[in-house]
Image 1 (cartoon, rainbow, N blue to C red):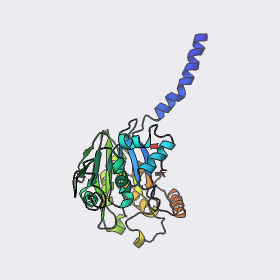
Image 2 (cartoon, rainbow, N blue to C red):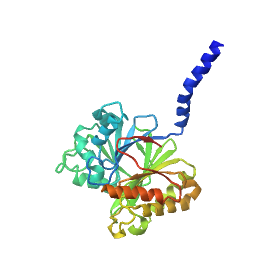
Image 3 (spheres, rainbow, N blue to C red):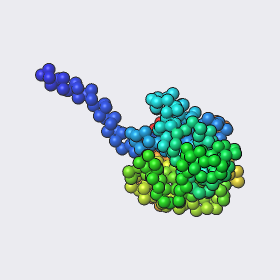
Image 4 (tube, helix red, strand yellow):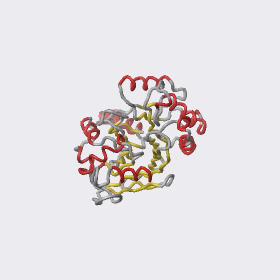
Length: 320
């Protein structure tokens, strides 16, 4: 009888860990936000570390803020290693959506202290980085292409649109799709694949109607089957201004109204039942704080599709 009681006691001690493990079994990605804002605070600009669940092989989705974000993640207990170690060893490469400084400044500033890895971007973005940043004038050329002396710490890999490309040392692949950001300036959406599970990360983008474009519509049509079969685990998409912002002052960005308009287009391709509960991670909120709070209120109040709206916080990880 004592042995039986001991077995029962051990089972209940083990049960909570079993429940937690089962609850996490559907997790596909680990996300560490290094920067979540869209302006003025140089220590908190667009950048997200993404890795397959239970690995330390991260790709950085944009690189506006790197070191300060890792510092906060370390302070929050997300990483048990030092900030320089995470920078050099955990980050395996960078996917840059476009070359505006709030998306690349962390990459530039931290390049002397970084380790050798690959920087991925589309042709227009890569050309801007080579011509204006890593050009041996405004900054040393830490890459293997472009102007000046090539220090060859970074491999600059230009992505072909829609072509699936391996992300070196991560076990993931990526496809790049064009976005319209202050037409005709082009930004990029990245569809990242880990063993048949996907996330979609959008750099800065305006709505199709304002940009006189169909780039978002084409993107929604592309990912609709992934939404239907539940393999798209989340969409990272910007909302920079409250709904009251006039269209002529959007400058290639979204508001809650325009985001929901675009999500309705996605629902038209995938079906309303399919998009219900879809994780939508809101990026690039622009200060002041009153504007950020209004954006959050509007998104929570104007969500007829039942999307799972997520507001990431710098240095606080989450799973998808």
